[in-house]
Length: 597
Image (tube, rainbow, N blue to C red; front, side, top):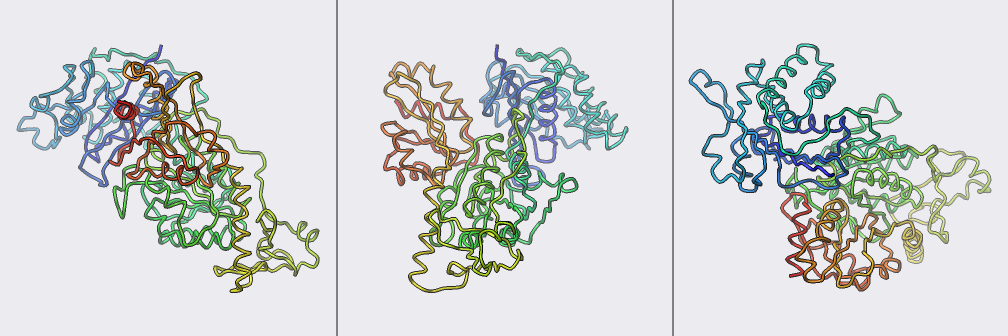
């Protein structure tokens, strides 16, 4: 039987909210449970409002929970923001202090009786988190006290938490270990006999699953592709992609370089790739704006280039720590003129790993840029996935060797870097290989790479680059389509990238919804992962005569427009979310029911 619990931990930035969530997720993993964790925080170091939303289940989960079963309110704002949405059987762990004059040094922003007015739950467990932390040895351990409380109400054996804390703080010495163990124990005991009515089977077990974020999956995918150079300029939420490979810099032959800006980062990646080193840079929408001229250089010189664009709301600075899907049409059309490129949008960390590997393969094979579309939600969410992150024994490369040159070219001086071929793909050699001359320029050029303003040559070179598209389209996976057999009057929730999990879970809810069934309406779903170039000839027969409800996190239904542009098929309706927060399955369900009504 499925047991599913959502825990929401809220407080101010600087109160260790993420630490509590991470501790909880790691203990759940050690017990063989599945988790889906998201962090919501403002663009500030201290204050404001932050929360961790952790869904725990004994079965696979593919989307975050929404309404908390257990709410941990470390400050007043958390209680005030959530109390009206709590269910009657929700459990609240409330940071409630009984201050006295001697406690004036404790600035806790704790909750009072007034904060409970209008609360949907009567199951309130009041714990003096800061007082217990002070008694344990330091206010800094208040988050560890809270963690102890949560584990107690979940029925987790304290030994499992103890084992994790010892492992986590081992490098900091016995004093820090003892401090946190004392704090956790005090929080655990403060919960007394209070237990949430749903319980898991807490038994340590070995599992072949891992807990991983989209950002880390992208970094591992690059390493698995033999990427050796990672130039970048920090920009939330893309920084985690490159940060994830830093621990490997002393173990693998890689270089991580923080550039002075995004322009330098993309040009470094192009330069290294020109020399034969696989390279990747990551950024968000604002940084990608600065990279567009570099994107054009890669296209003109036909140099492989892989970029991760981890999206966030804009324009300009927008919401730096929030999520969105606003860059699709921009990425497909970025830089002046027209040239082939690949755009991939994975839906979870496992797909991200494979998409990054695919991007390196395709970018080098076709000598075009490849862009992987993540977003803040996918990049930072921590999800339990099967550990099928494998490195291929051999990484296929598409570069001329000296042997190739000697066999193919006679004499080597006749080497044409941009030779016109039926496929549009020219033989790629590296600089300083034997007696050949490798030329590259941002200007239009002839087959040898020499600058040319000849009109006929311009037509030939443009056609040569575009002739790659026919084969590129065949490399694209068609969307994942779930269409229950024997059903009429069917609507398809249609999305791309990180909306995959919430869409599929929304479908699972809708297929048994009474309101939809009474109207004789059925649902299916269509999820795009490989987006550009779009193969209209293969796609159109699959989605023709289907009623599409677009589910996107932008204001102008960009994937819907792209489908119409390429296939002529017009979507029926849209569910758009533009508040910077991720999709929840229930939100999609309610909006879909409004549409069919």
